[in-house]
Length: 76
Image (cartoon, rainbow, N blue to C red; front, side, top):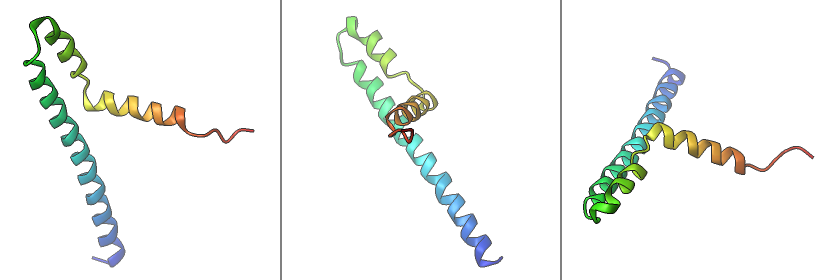
């Protein structure tokens, strides 16, 4: 395999691994948050679980939209 193909494959694998790692970290934090909801009074648990029910895909969409809205405008 040529060096260029090897480098491209390695870059792709690193990018995929980074994406999986970010999602795994998010899911782990979300699960911990749900666990902590059980420590709250019953009257607060449902709201806590609802707040921690956002999927990684929803979170990432919202994050990207926020980043896009905060980007400096190039129009003058």
